[in-house]
Amino acid sequence: APGVGKTTLTMAMAATVSMGGHWPDGSRCEPGKVLIWSGEDDPADTLLPRLMAAGAKRENCHFISGVEQKGQSSPFSLARDMPILKAAVQQLGGIRLLIVDPVAGAVTGDSHKGNEVRNGLQPLVDFAAACDCAVLGITHFGKGGQGADPTSRVLGSVAFAAVARVVLVAAKTKDAAGNPARVIARSKGNVTPDDGGYHYHLEQVRIEGGIDATTILWGEKVEGTARELLADPDAGDDEEGDVADAASMLGQLLVADCWTPAKEATKELIDAGFTKKQVRNARKKLGVISKKSGMQGGWYWRLPHGNEPDLPAEDALLPPEDA
Image 1 (cartoon, rainbow, N blue to C red):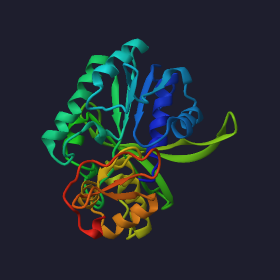
Image 2: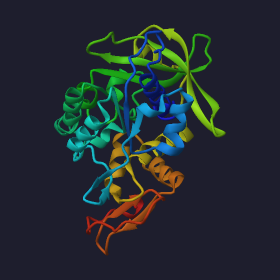
Image 3: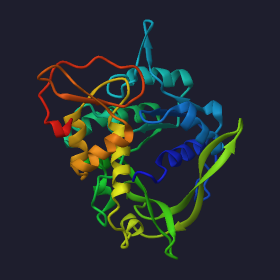
């Protein structure tokens, strides 16, 4: 769920692999290289500081920033550039972990259609087998569905969870004393148990250079299914939190250097259970830039950073309230 520290959790796992550290259960991890692709967070000001705060071995941590061929640079595409990535991994001497954030970036088609999701994820599955590494993909919960099986709440097609061997879910909950807490729990395990988890806490630390960063402090082991561990019978309506969740999801759907059809982004959020009002407020929160393609074209959105790209060709006109 948004706001639980998914990125910080993931960087803590990456750091553990990079240095051969210990997992929360005390077991030791064999050290190895980690490769990270993020379409949401900047490596320099967000990811690397959190890796360092978690004690990562810097020389074992690598980031995918783009593709350069014949003197031309372009953004990295999970759907298009996997052969190039395999070659880069061979040059590194192999990796033990690839992190993909968000994993929906691997799917070029409709992320709510099972066949298209499976086809989109298959190159990642093949990559993991060829490179003998784990792949960790990050995604959101859909809006609503509290109290249901957490695996069924994964945003988009059920194929995202079906393809995965293990599904870990993180959420805000309460501890045995009724105090606010965070928990990460196994919701599915094809080759592991599918229950149990750990409480964790987010802590601000200052690393070398006077940089503030967030890291994970692991808490006690907890027993039970993910559905039981994430249940919060006292949870009520939280409009401000809903808008923050919608903004977090919208921030993953949009990028700064290209235009996204507004109707596609809106549909993703509406399908996830957000209202049109929450979508509008999420847009305001992010400062999303809107532009219309031609006199009869559709509306397009982008994040308010980076260079302004050219608009696509004219599309179907959207109603003004969706613009």
